[in-house]
Image 1 (cartoon, rainbow, N blue to C red):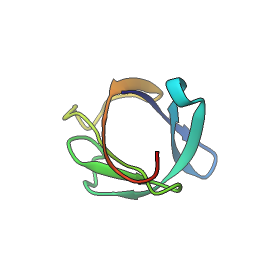
Image 2: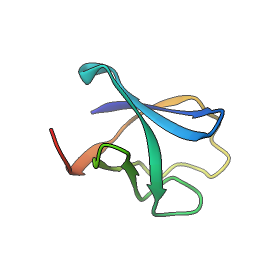
Image 3: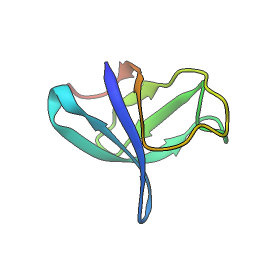
Image 4: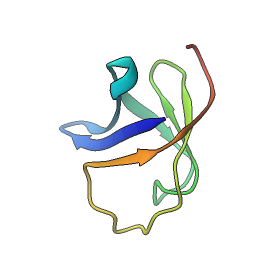
Length: 70
């Protein structure tokens, strides 16, 4: 699914246009963000692609949902 990752005033958030859903990112598996999973406040876990650590935000990426509420 397409997900836009952006930095807001308090941290990172993810926006899923297909669901019109924006949630803060509350957990990051890898310090560099990319190539691991992130957990959203609503419980979703998304696997992000492996991108360079200096990738600029905001960016839209193809992520895979691995768990959480629908």
